[in-house]
Image (tube, rainbow, N blue to C red; front, side):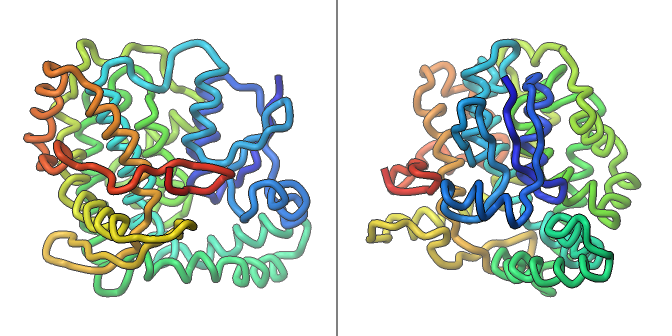
Length: 356
């Protein structure tokens, strides 16, 4: 069975899907989403311009990386990307949310404030692979304007940029400390948490030249982890036994809980107040804080959809399992999650997020 992955090297979520498919041993062909491919193949079905998209052997299109991974997990045997233990599975989903929805800040900051000229040329190569360099840059500049325009809406401004860099550099230090003891997030092989983190860390923060140089110099262990996932050297070891969360992961979880949970809580308040049938991609703006620096970021309901998966696991735990999970939350300033309820249940239908 041959799958088709419509993806691009420059795309954050393409990196996540591609690396996972390689690890799972999926037979797939990657096709660049040129304007013609987007217009004739993807837009008529998906309804909006987005990658990655996976086409199954029977012609079904699957768009979201979470859905792509869930589909392949159901179709293929072998080690699962989802840990068996509920505690590790819960933490996996928390890191999935953090990687997909919060590491976008440093990913977008470094791309557009440190790598802009390079990435515009990359966009041009993607749209017009046979054009001359000057034409590619002109096309890339035009196509990149939409992405660049999103940067302030995500919370990346001249005022917040120094704090974003400080937070990201601290993240690199914390992840490096974990990787001195473990090859992957939960031991000897990758899980969904690894592939989620790989998305921004590879496509923007390793592959873009200026941010890549920073990672390689400050956090060479993180760069080597990226390279293992990129090159298919994924390991066949075991996950950490007894559903344990290693102490080296606690700083990463604490960073997520301190920085991102207040944003999720404020977004949840806006979702509770939302009245309508068509759920927008953003419900407005909400505040965030990185250290003593404050800013405003989009209130994205999709962030709550990602969190919803983790909360469902938490709420399904036995009392003993919940006690162990609560110990992790208490140790990482995540107590708010014990009683966190998504204001309105969310599902994906027809390639869009909507109210259940």
